Amino acid sequence: MTLGERIRTIRQSLKWTQDELAQEAKISKSFLSEIENDKANASGENLLKISNAMNVSMDYLMKGESAPYDKMPQKVEIPFTLSALAEEKGLSYKATLMLLSTHQSLIAKRSSVEKSEMTKEDWWNLYKNLKGYLE
Image: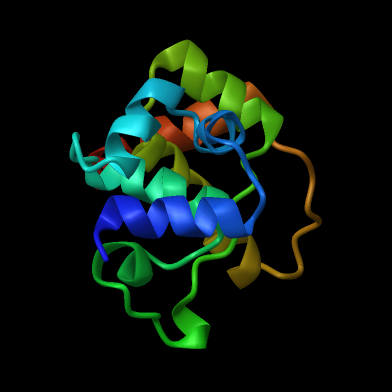
């Protein structure tokens, strides 16, 4: 089974249309159609978007093999303020996810710190401090 066939099979098992998956993955419907029909290759970034949207592992999408349960990707929810900043500043999806992950790791290690909502300015300051590590 090809990558495109696996994506189509999973999408259909979720009872999603191409429109629905494209919206969830933030890619165009026409590009998704080309991927499903093996007429286009998707970048790693787009495959990550698709796998996150469908909550399947990259291993399964690429090779048809499931990753161990503890390594299965979880659906990522990007806070509105981070999403707005990423769009405003043109941050890549990868940089946005890495920024979110870094923030979550810092908060987890400082469990005594009260968790408050980050503002766009907070996210931007964190990005500027970590920029060299994120790119």
